[in-house]
Length: 586
Ligand SMILES: [Zn+2]
Ligand SMILES: [Zn+2]
Image 1 (cartoon, rainbow, N blue to C red):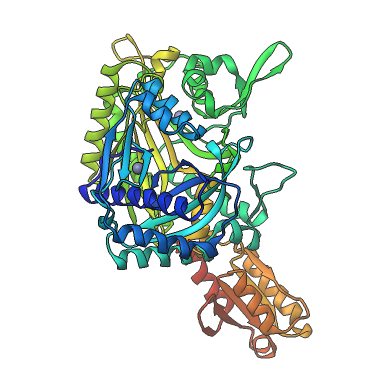
Image 2: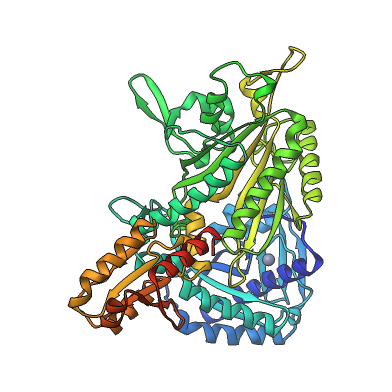
């Protein structure tokens, strides 16, 4: 679970949802005796629980389960915590391998198991926290039923997962339910293939999305804007291959701290290679390729670099969780006194991207290390403290709203992770800026300072929007597929009313094409109404209709997506309007 410094309000909500989850378990046990409880947390928007049982339930059963939950809530049963010796806990759950596995974990950490009783009727192994009694659980709703592999691993048993949520007030719950309905309509996993933006092909493999020509336009437009911004601010683009020797990753520490996410190494002749899980080491080697002077710093290397990460199949989803992801990555190698200015520069770049995407609600999560977690982080408490403090100072100065997430840092440094809210109010994690005071020293990267001494540079890792795949997924949902003009794969469709208007329509298309506008000519024999409808379905922002009147007068009729007729105008007028709109990223 993510730990973050939460407001008392969100802590209460968390406790309430967690308690609702226990009530769900209790209700399920009553309705389906013999099922086995696996595991379930309170999550960002609610809670879920995984059950192991042979019966089948579907969404039609949810109202019945909810009714039973309401009974339990109405009884206002006290929820009581009890510390329980390991031996007793083992016995209490002796029939349940899932709980035993959890007890193993607790034992490994040397902790004492805690139980939570609901009244005297129901008990579960749980770390809490909970509300004091079931009556404190606010309006709740069960949402969906899904199959879920234990630990998300498809070699493990398939469990039945029930998702639900709870809120403090009814309007908040209603808004959330609206959001879910709206999200279904915008689901990029459906809209993406429907709008011919990307496909996932079983012969290629799971988590390996293929961008179609249209999807690639969206990707290229994002990258082109990034390059434009970077070009103005002194970034230099590089290109690096997708594999490297595994020894390099041993030296960087990825091997020790990041191995779970890396694919198995493979041999080429007598050498061992891996697919790159991050772009950093490749960029470091460019830096290290020749002696560097302080005058060259900051050196801002940038690359849309594709990385490969081991994600369990149960956790993959469309473009948002993939096995091959392209990070719009940069590594800035700099002197320590340049940290503030470089972070400010990168924060401004991130905000410029958000503005272009119409993402107006954002905040940051300051992800720090957990000093107690020795396995996850490079051991050097003093440097961690220094990096964390510096980053907090930067965030404060930036006046961005922030929360602290302990234990969410990268293994080499703390980070500023940007969170955004999309058009329907859902939160997404996007860009990341990371301060790394370790890696240069670890790899022996140096520069010669003004006084002739050798020093290690400091590194800023920057994912401008994060993963391009994820960003495209987010944008499909944020815009419900109706991209603004600058991102639209097809910007204009030209529709000739009848055959005799084809040559005029072709002339119109050619002129738009000359102006670098993305135009399609729809000269299919179907009716004009049908072709307008199809253009609407394809979410094309502008439609040009030409018939006798237009041909004779030498002008065009224009319609916009989802709106009315713009009427007749000259082609030059429209072209000017479109180019202006594109330049302004509208
Ligand atoms: Zn619990
Ligand atoms: Zn990096």
